[in-house]
Length: 110
Image 1 (cartoon, rainbow, N blue to C red):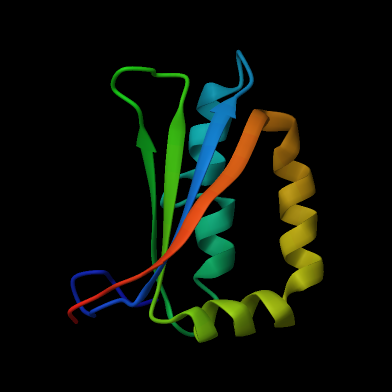
Image 2: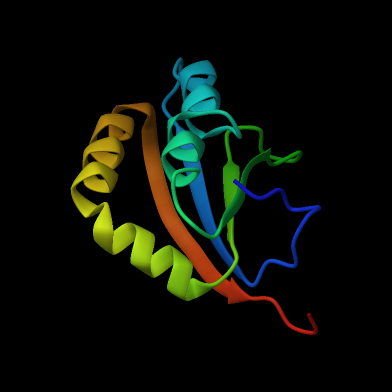
């Protein structure tokens, strides 16, 4: 895994989540920078980091930032690990009452 400080990343995926009441700690563990998603992505060439952020005005709302060197690196990883991606997603569904992709972003000016 490459760290964000080591590289000029180029692709960012932002997700919004609302964990189920009582599942916040397990959600933070699963979606945090050392959680199941970060460990899974870390096996991919071009993965940089995952961040978990909680909304200061609405502490029941979280966003994740998944950082990759490029969209191609992410797409290739997801395509070659789709079954495992879907299994982790299904496993983590029990932790959330709401999830949606807010967008995918390309870094400019790098």
